Amino acid sequence: MRRGVHWGLVSSCLLLALAGCARMWFAEREPWRREAEVACLQSGAVKESPSVALMRAIDGPGVCGADYPIRVAALGEPALVGFADEVVRPPGSVGGVVDPVNRAPYRPAQSYPAQPAPLPPVQSAPGQPISLGRPASPAIAAGPAAVSPAATLACPLVATLDRFVSDQVQPAAARWFGQPVVEIRQISSYSCRGMNGDPNARISEHAFGNALDIAAFTLADGRKITVKDGWHGAPEEQGFLHDVQGAACDAFSTVLAPGSNAYHYDHMHVDLMRRASGHSICEPTPVPGQVAAARAGGRLRPRAAEPAFTGSVGQRRSSLRITPYADVDDARLPHAVAGRD
Image (cartoon, rainbow, N blue to C red; front, side, top):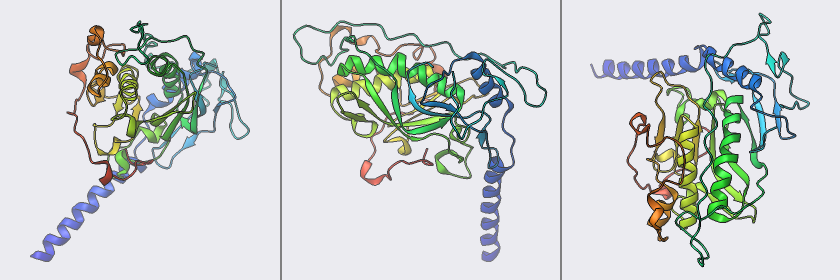
């Protein structure tokens, strides 16, 4: 009897493992992914630059891949898609990509979100070396921010990241530090795997180049703001990172930052996953940067109730799956790497 129970458990585990493998190896990639890539290329949203190049199609293993993946070494400056030595041009012109089989122009299934509104300017209190309530944005020249290492991503995500870095990350850096971000450290872009690195879990958006994990931002003076240390770090670091997270929740359909779960204690995951419900996920609950800075010991000015991030986070709050924030013991957690979210 005991042996029968043992083999029954083993069989159940094998079936679950096979089911997970089947989702990754035998399922078909959703047609909308190809349509979204082509629509993005047709729109001209991703522009040519020495650091942006269209690569050869990634076809598998299994359902993983992208038809027109893009290699990105910098974000934040619009530019037409370039072509490196190891990459190829898509069928037809970039402005009118066609189906290589039917030779007919693709028609996108749906449009993409409009460019998010830029952050409103705010005046700093005079005579204070650092205002932790929402410092004013000095006039700075913010060029493209290098992506290190270079990321392999699908066109729609590249376009959204470009706008996000230019319109949200750089203004937030100007407000909190008076200088631009010159480098974004990423720890996972395209990666054929299940969520949280579990082969039995649902396929990750990383498996389609539709997700990016951001671990740190480097400023023009060389200062590095890591998600791991800055989330609980100096007031201005907390203010900056919380403003970035809040803005990300408007730009992307999934945002997971420290406090969402153990796997995201040291980076911020963003993706453009499409859910049948149309809902977005933003975890933990977004907090305005000035509020986070005040909690860390900064001074909260009278206008503190006004959120530093823009958009409709508050309006769509009912559609978000919120996880209450809980501190985690970093010492017991493995360092997050590709395959861990």
